[in-house]
Length: 353
Image (cartoon, rainbow, N blue to C red; front, side, top):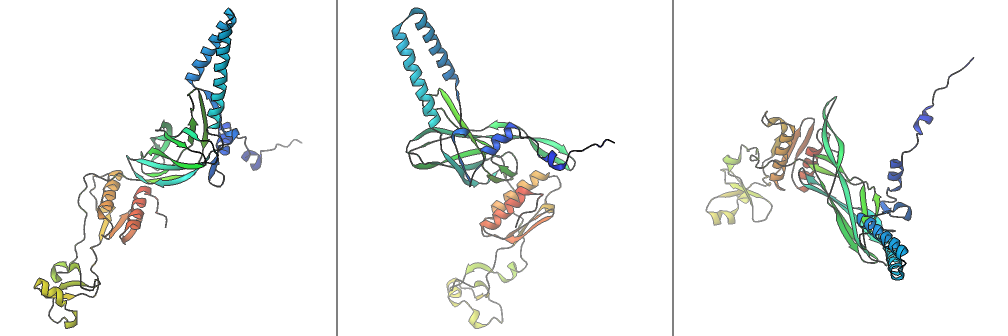
């Protein structure tokens, strides 16, 4: 009686790693720092180096054919210089430490800046180092719940260069184009050097867990803020001017106000009777409501207008934000503005508290 065996879950889970997975695993950070060891550096001749090698081979064959002693001496001297250049180029990146630095958010259409901290713990200077990251090129693909985005290609970005003295550190600022709102993660960073004469290219990789947020592009020009007028503003004539003690706010005198609430000095200066309210008059609350926008605006246009209004509110005006399934209570200040912008960037996700 024969029995058939099926693969166990453990056997299917332990599939062999591909070379790309192996490279990515070995170039990950250890305690937040990627150290460029000997086994993580790669070197190949450049086009100039390959052309120079052909020239040296031609000189060697000519010297052998015509038995030119001076040709032999010059050829082997240049070969020695090439070998020294190869070691110098390799040494220029050896044992460098690369860590994550500051990350700044960006708006759609701008560039997100990722800072990398590079430490040189050797006494030898490191000259002409470059770092670049391939920015993903986005393409729209239709999914079961509407449109989704996926990465279909990469676009090379501008390289950032750095030169370090011995026992020093510096920063490499990588600029990635912010093509769409949401989370933008730093892809694999390639660090390379062609020092000293550009005959060899030495490079390595660094995979750092850095990410930032891309806010919607603010609408330009945007309509004025939809301020909510208060009913008692015109009746009592409240003024957003502090009284003499710097605490109370002032309004016009009403019949029956107690004498100790009258602002005598301010009334004497202005010629109008003013009373202290006993509480600070706050700016009117402003609700930025998704559903109050015109029906002709699509999703990104709505988010762009709301983003422009959040920026226009500044730090003093109380604003609240209403999105489908997301509501942020009125508030003001830099932290509140950042929370609103994060909600706009991540919508339809809920903002994390």
